[in-house]
Length: 313
Image (cartoon, rainbow, N blue to C red; front, side, top):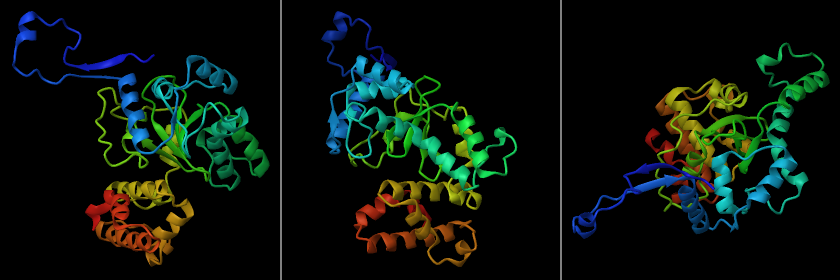
């Protein structure tokens, strides 16, 4: 089971008789562990109407790993052994067939191969791209079979199985082969998850990753295969757009709908550009708001979805 990895205050020290008898309030002491964090997270998942089944046993974990040829990273494993979310979007590691789970594991690579077939992607480490599409796919498939497996957490969100350490980053990989870094680790991912209720006041564990660990292939892919606006919008503007689109996607909008919403009749965007200043972003935020309201969203939902962009107008 997961072991304690950080302690604020010496909770394990022996209290003296004088301390026990003292009426002076003692400072609150907090001990963070994977298990303590996992229990809190599971309770918040349940309170957010996420169906959670009994956690996976050691034998179930071993069977899954051996049959699908991958290893759960320790932090995700700890959470799944305390409780397994099974609502829509979450992989059901207990009830899904081996074929279904294998498909989920293969989806990120399949998505990249689809991007290769559209002549939109070729990694520099693979050498010169063959001119024949079929041969290019064969080359790409050969290289991609050795990259670290991505373990599904929720919908298009994955965590690498290798290195088999706690603190691996979480990546977003969609069906079009877009790869993006979502969070530094699994705690950061759940800390910002849109499916948790607003009363989820996430306190960063002391063991949370302060920066994203480099993961073979996927880290570089996230840097070079960013969302479509990365080629134009940079810095604060790019970060703003990226966060807003992530929230729209989590709210159920498809990528093509978000793209259309972002372009929406603006001549500069139609020419392939992107907003480069705060005023231009503010215009698009107002446009998004109007379209979301017309689509039936409440003002509260719109404020939450585009809340990260509220400072832009």
